[in-house]
Length: 115
Image (tube, rainbow, N blue to C red; front, top):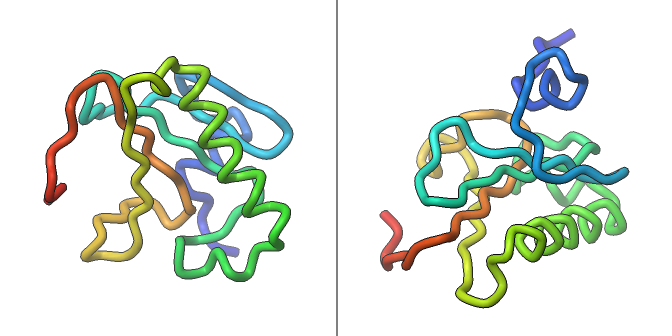
């Protein structure tokens, strides 16, 4: 059995987090190293490793994950000015946890290219 990721430990409650939203499908919490005034992570409760493996999830789970991201951004009041959603994959994409998660970044003007 592989070791649980930090996100699995957060979901089960063995690691505390600053929760901003939860429903039956997703869990959202503030990033411990924020890169913007608002930096929240959204994780689906159905685990998949990355964007490359999301195709193994059923379409309903994928849709609920995307809808959860939108709901969290709206609840954070980011709709009016805008926000960025980032999904990292692999070493070059700077994915640090092998559990798909979306970064919602807002509260300031974003630049392009992102880096």
